[in-house]
Length: 141
Image (cartoon, rainbow, N blue to C red):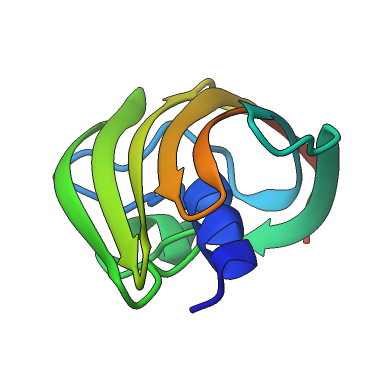
């Protein structure tokens, strides 16, 4: 996994594993936008990414459903899921680097909001990545 992949995995790793309670998310076509700011020794401009995804009721009830698979080299240390949201901690390791990730996502029916904070130790120095994630249901699939 390259350092760039480590950043992407860290910024976007928002597991949504269903638990006993189905997440408070209305099925349909969703648009997710994430904006990442990086502070550290290497100047990296803010980056905003968006994507659309169809989420079916069956997806929400599937215990394997996730927005993004946990990348190789990453370990989910803790996660607490409820109908109203998810909190998690993860660590990703790569040759010469490590990322400590803390995330929170609130499920608000037809919206989701959250943040991911990543502390990266790498050969390029220490970096702090802060990502704000917003999602909204657009329509039926």
